[in-house]
Each structure stands twice: as C-alpha cells, then as structure tokens.
Length: 111
Image (cartoon, rainbow, N blue to C red; front, side):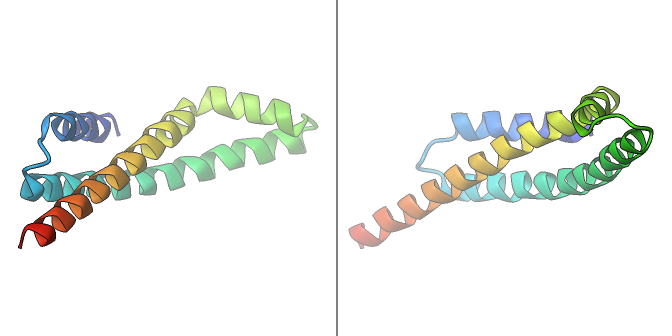
C-alpha cells in the first residue's frame, strides 16, 4: 500500500510541474493515477470489511457503535488514510480531465 501511495504522490507532483501545453503527458499521468486509485480501491474494500467486522464484534460484546468505531479506527488506521488520500487523488484526476478538456477546446478554437 505504501509503495502505491508513494507512486501516487510522485505522479501528483509531476502533474503540478507539468505545463498545460503537454496534453500527452497529462493523459499519461491521468492513466497512471487512475490505475493506482483502482488498486487502492481494492485495498480499501478489504480494509473496510475488516473494519466493519471489528465494529460488529465489538457491538456484539455490548459496546456502543461510536465506541466500536473508535476502536476500529485504532486497529485499522489505514482506513482513514486511504479514504483521505483517495478522495484527493480523485479530485486530482478530475482536475487533469478538466485541463485536458480545456486544451482540446483551445486546440479546436485555433483550427
């Protein structure tokens, strides 16, 4: 998981350095970022199942749902980390798509 998050961070940094005059590179970055997000989505799904299992077991033992969620977050800190990083990754991919659309629009105006 950490390797994929590091790669995602690297691609996001490349996006920030990439100029709007390079739609090919933007498209490559979009492809790489969405691929990593798909992989992280599978991990998040697995972690979510484990997270929910902890909550279920703790509530069966009589703990409140709020308390069970707090304990589940302690046992699975990657749940929060994945959610926050992936949300940001999806926003970045949306921004890249917007930039690509803008470039295509500008190219069509000049033709």
